Length: 118
Image (cartoon, rainbow, N blue to C red; front, side, top):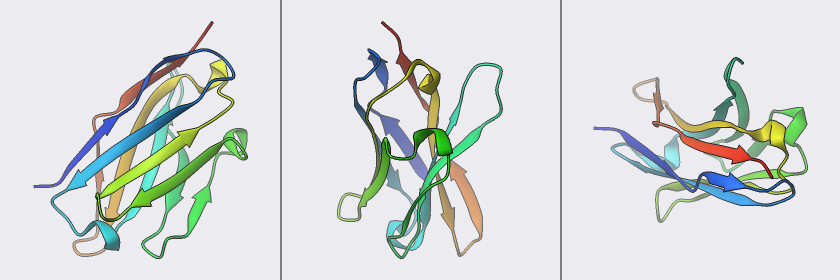
């Protein structure tokens, strides 16, 4: 079955960095579009970044452009979110998602908490 397991979250001071990882299994990783979402308390879930099966990376959230980078390691079936210059408003639960073509379905990880605070 499909599994997405995030790691790398935690508590970091403003201005710091974290790298989130999402290890995937149960589907053909190289053929899926992988995304990171986040949800802060009391707010709707927000699409942060996507990397397509062609390797094209897109950062969707204007508030993180220039600070967050999405990447993949197909040999490890892992997607990363490098987060730099973190701000308190980046505090949220970050989840990875896989969108597969066949079947056309979206899968979710359980999420990892990121807290930016001094």
